Amino acid sequence: MQANSSLPLAQVQISLAERSYSIFIGSKLLGQALTYQHLPKAATALVVSNTTVAPLYAAQLTQALQSHYAKVVLVTLPDGEVFKDWPTLQLIFDGLLENGCDRKTVLFALGGGVVGDMTGFAAASYMRGVPFVQVPTTLLAQVDSSVGGKTAINHPLGKNMIGAFYQPVQVVCDLDALQTLPDRELSAGLAEVIKYGPIADMAFLEWIEANLNALLAKEPTALAHAIRRSCEIKAWVVGQDERESGLRAILNFGHTFGHAVESGLGYGQWLHGEGVGCGMVMAAHLSQRLGLVDSAFVERLTTLVQRAGLPVKGPILSATDNAGRYLDLMRIDKKSEAGEIRFVLIDGPGKAVVRAAADALVREVIDACCA
Ligand code: NAD
Ligand code: GLY
Image (cartoon, rainbow, N blue to C red; front, top):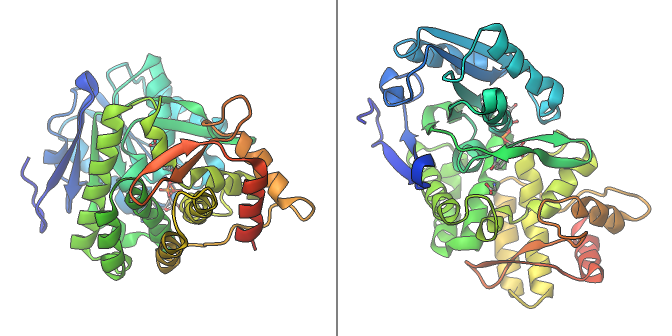
């Protein structure tokens, strides 16, 4: 595909046999009919967005889709992690049924990871599965959540606990959309970019360290490289372990502590990427206490997370037994087995391992890392 773009169009392939698809990365993609030329044919396209993103980008997208679909419907959800729930998911099903959508209808997720995860889950279950396209508009969604087919909603007791593995048929990462992203959200996305270094590619970590100021300034060439390399690493992992029977768990570096922060404080208090940022620092400390990395590595990662504008100390979740509260929350994690928490740890820079750790050691880390 040729894009009318100021940067060369990059394409990353997710190779999963009949579920394979392309990630397009470039500028001026979202509002171009050409971007969507190879999608499945259908009478109707249904775009799901939210009250923040729809006014910015829905008109461009729906106009482009009108070249391919006779009817284009927009469903606008309330904005926020707190709405990643059953009643809000129902709004998507309402829109599908009220507009007579059939099993060929193509869904488009226009927004960040919340819209993407919910639209994917709706696509997985509407009429037992309809095609969907990810059009991610946050950095976090472009480097992580739109790729790989994890879809979910939250439960009050645990993050992303109800969902399905369901791959999109295409991902469209338009760099221009990131220009309207608030700084705090950009930093949250950088957490998921940074994570790919320690788990898989220390050369990429060095590149992030050298180019962090350009990324924070939303310099398009730097963003394009960060998104492309992140998607390549994620494609390499997902291509080997689509349903997380092993390797894919490494993509959750920082998430065990981070999810505890998100659900412990109440969804939406800390951003997902903020939880992951300080969660990576806590997981690095745990790795050090287990003798897997040295203190220089922990300091290096902490400095980068802090420079990215992310918290490096966890919040206090309980005045009486803070570490106990973290442990209780972390036991409700999809990686837990028979109540035993399994952490993604760094086993020497650039390599991750998933393993359990003694509660006493985890308590020490939490006590040292919370303020
Ligand atoms: P988000 O979807 O809440 O978006 C962040 C905020 O930015 C929202 O207020 C949104 O309306 C706004 N926004 C989005 N695009 C914008 C733009 N271009 N300009 C201005 N504002 C914009 O949060 P997120 O960080 O994108 O995603 C976090 C979610 O993703 C969490 O629910 C997390 O669990 C999930 N996630 C899923 C996966 C996965 O593999 N499926 C991976 C990582 C995270
Ligand atoms: N974000 C973690 C994963 O996709 O597996």
